[in-house]
Length: 188
Image (cartoon, helix red, strand yellow):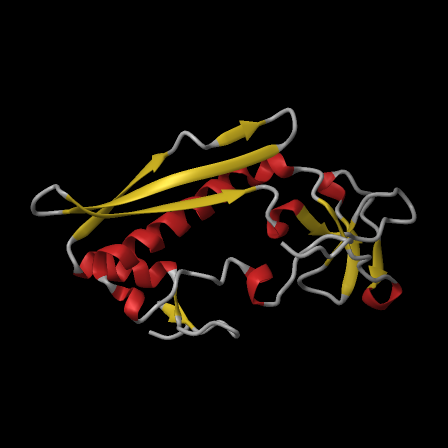
């Protein structure tokens, strides 16, 4: 199903297989995924750098044999994890303001250490990108993205669907024009 199992990313030659589509395909083919963390994985809590390399093996349910494998990686220096949107500071306490989901306003999140003040949305603008000052909270997200990339690659290998689909690129915004680079806007 378009938009759920696969999607067409502007600038790519074929539709991209998404994770739900990969799960559907491996179920149809009678496969079960098994994930393994590879030696290239790095967890550097001192520097806040996380890099996961994952192998996904798709196992035949009936025979227990490996039908195909795929490798996926993800790290905290990728644009979407390295940078975050800068938020204006609360003039009363200096805490980062957040945009309300319910009202057209900025708020200073009291339960997270702010003062609870609110300001009209038109009073402040986000100020660009800054380096993420808390990469530690992303370690699990980065691991899951590496698993997802390995999973999709293994599914394409096992099912021969690479004739129809390309690797899941919706998570690689920098490659398709949705740059998430920091202030220098460098090309990779």
